[in-house]
Length: 121
Image (cartoon, rainbow, N blue to C red; front, side):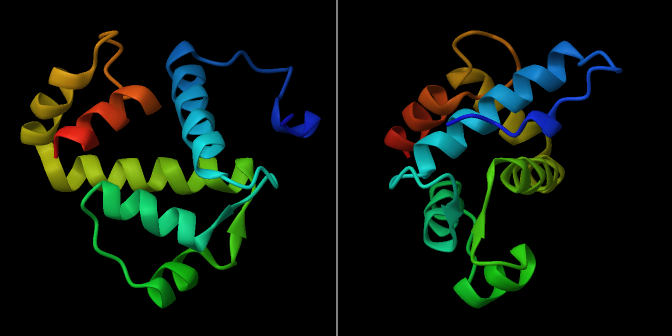
């Protein structure tokens, strides 16, 4: 799947950390988009949240997201918000736990590292 050309702004350099976060978020998006229609559904988001140990009701998630599906750009904003809330909630304990599964030591979990962590839990 290709991203919309308008997603990138050529006039401003993209920071490496932002690019890494984007690649991770897009990798997760691609894995969640099981039917490869270019959108992640509420059901697919529910699976992601449950995998992370976040309890959410379907109607609450629909209200939060504001639609039935997310395209890659919308998912990136959702992912950033989710990660920010998760880090705020978990604090240092979760960061230390994540370090165990962060095999490439970039400070983030890519999809394979995330999957390995979930397989243990």
